Length: 264
Image 1 (cartoon, rainbow, N blue to C red):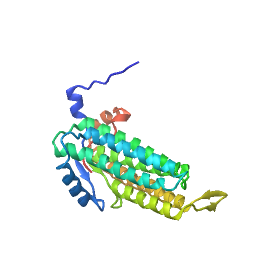
Image 2 (cartoon, rainbow, N blue to C red; image 1 turned 135 degrees about the horizontal axis):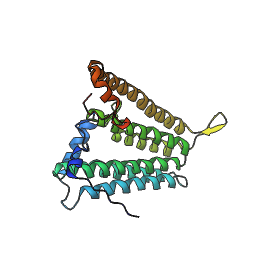
Image 3 (cartoon, one colour; image 1 turned 60 degrees about the vertical axis):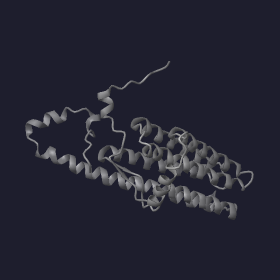
Image 4 (cartoon, rainbow, N blue to C red; image 1 turned 180 degrees about the horizontal axis):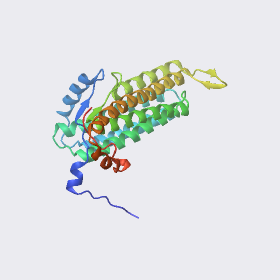
């Protein structure tokens, strides 16, 4: 059975699809933006944002192929590294090109971009788990931590109007570079084995466990801080309201509790 989704103009206008403020404080942000603007001015007109999105997905598949191939020959780590560059090119330029050409499609772009990002992250980290030297459970732990951070970003954007693109001065580009460096490390150093509680881990596993732990910790700490702040801010009007207004508040449905979009 096929279902169609139709949104009226009034409903669509109320859907928040574009972040009010893009918070991007990662180390390479300014230099990367200058490079992307330079490339956008020189990309042929036949190249479209959708085409670049598809290129980014192709790059993620190349990374997956390289990691799986490394089980047979470590030289495949170079293919995975090449895939990261292709993925960066497509993923970073699709939205940049749309904004450069003033052809943004806010709802479509927002929805497609983040849906594709989720798929690409799954391909890359699952591929890492099928590589020569990293356990699958460790790679999936990193993926879960990254998805938790993404969930925090989307929720924070909804309640504050700020779309946080970096944590600890690191963003997606720095994470890609980190994975490229680890690829080089694995290629040069080869296998390693460390026994912990009867389980075999590699030195690379321990690094990725640390990364996953940092992701989960950032999610927990930031969620607690924002939830505590929202609780204080949302409690102020209730305490100042008259007793006659309290029954009306109590009648709100559960899913209306977080309807406020006032910036933090």
